[in-house]
Length: 509
Image 1 (cartoon, one colour):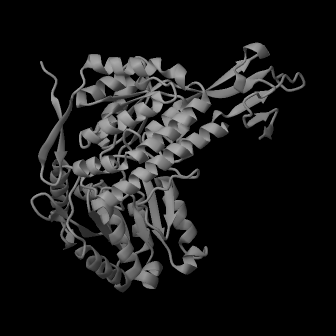
Image 2 (tube, helix red, strand yellow):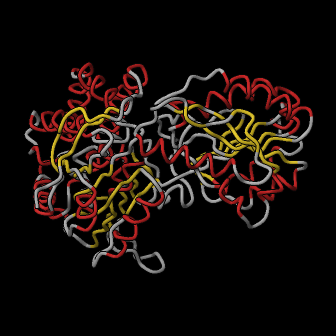
Image 3 (cartoon, one colour):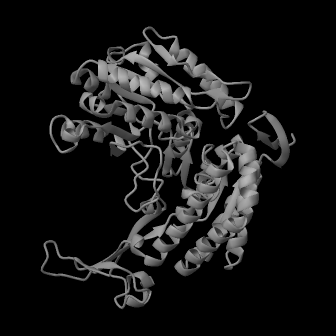
């Protein structure tokens, strides 16, 4: 049977643009993985890795016009958004190059023999080594930053791990172009082009996670797809780590005092966050606990005015559009659910933003309204009106894990009075990032960032954004009683690589 063609599709019209490739066969997946595996030795030199990452950033910037044009044609996200996302991607590559140069990620620890300790300590030296080939599953909503050259790829290469990327079907042409740029950058430093493999097709993704030479996987996508791959990774004869980002409701709590203080500003801010990128951000606020009463009414009026002024937009593909329309219709049909601004079809290929309201009491027990506690991808949020703090807390207690959780406090509460400390304590178990008086959309690439959370937000405790994302692709190894001449250079007493390390309990920089 001939392999199925892979088409680039315009989400603005639903029409095919061009045939880009064909879906990879099992043999082609095997070849890509084996080529990546063979490239491991070329990444062993940290200086080469850092130079490769910086050259990749330079060459992506040099190709910006063509890349952004192709990305816009396949995603309809617009040149402004995509130009910024490409800049973020290049910054991320350079940030990991800096991390590689510094070397602290190797976590070098040396203990010299100590016969006086109980029990005695032998000569022990520990550092981290790369796992091997990493499978990367691209996301639909970030065609640069969470795709072929995105955070999973950048952090894996920085760790010394080659990658094989399963391209997302929403941007196959862009995936091919970016992969070519990365391969050229690799070749410029003597690294085999197979260090970045690329495959297309659903079956190829399944073959990839099961390949015996694949040692770990990174995924960003739906709960259904991510859970299937996670289970496959665990069911292998040799299970592998699967770092998946699956779905998130990103709850927001607005205290009565905060609403009384600045209802209009909070309503306008919420509208901007929930409609950003046509509601296609993984950290879009999907459930908002707002107080009943006059202050809450003012907030809803501000939200209504702002959302009503939002233009209809194009989702990433027509399947997502169909799911969005079906999802909001099913939610709006539930008892006591109202639509002050009805989300739905904005045109033949677009959707219009809106929001739903429901009494919070409908979410405090088991029942059909549990649907409102599930993510609906697109420009919609649910406002649950609560009568008192106990009711708000009861809703929070029923939420699954999230990437983010947000609270808006009054000035007095933010100073530590009233409900402020208690609410932070309630939100912390729910998410990997807790915000006060802000909005979750926008994930800074920074050392202190954590983009992850309790399941189903992610399948591990790691982050996919920020410098510590590199830790996912490393494993520690300790050497005991190994002669100096046989030790890796990272662990020798004279520290020939100039690495930061901890020796006999003392940090050396």
